[in-house]
Amino acid sequence: MPVLTDLTLEQVDLPNSHYGYSATRIEDLGATEYTVVTIACDVSGSTAAFSMEMEAAIKKIVQACKFSPRADNLLLRLVQFDDRLDEIHGFKLLENCHAADYSGVLRSGGMTALFDATENAVSATVSYGKQLAAGDFSANAIVFVITDGADNTSKLSVKKVRKAFTQAITGEALESVVSILIGVNVQDQSISQCLRQFHQDAGFTQYIELEQADAQTLAKLAEFVSRSISAQSQSLGTGGPSQSLIF
Image (cartoon, rainbow, N blue to C red; front, top):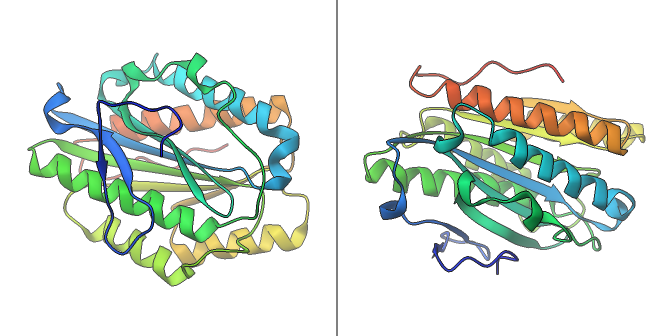
């Protein structure tokens, strides 16, 4: 269940999945086009040392996006994962996302179901994109998966993740999809290699690696994420995705 419970969001099941998602009802949308944003954040036990800094980064992302010229055209979903997935909130209009709501929402513990979380993030984005298309809305999407470690407990394989990405890219519901895997606090070379391999095997658009997870580094990450969201939103209508930004 979502942590930030919102009764205005519709609950949606995903076929062959233990996890679904929630989203703003189509009839409650006022614009004609939207960029669908998903952020999946690792909260496995090893992230406990910087969970507060990560929450601060999420707040900065929300605040920065509100200054975007495309602020009225953004829908944001936030999930956290360790060995299970929790939806903090489903696809909400940015105007209904408030920085203060993200205090104390991240919990740390458990292992890392990176493949499961990524597959859900992509599949939910595609599913909602289909709803938007059926309602005659134009839409594109951007997905961020933030982790400090490799997968060690997923039920799904990386092939299932690849399939989800392929369906996102080749389907007709979303004009374009950008996906960014972000490794934070990556100081172990073996973890770096695993994440780089996952980036390739799953089919992410881009991989960003951060050696630290301190306040300054995560603040810079928040700026990168918000700029990437703005760029992808501004590309809607061009027929293609935004160009990858340099961290």
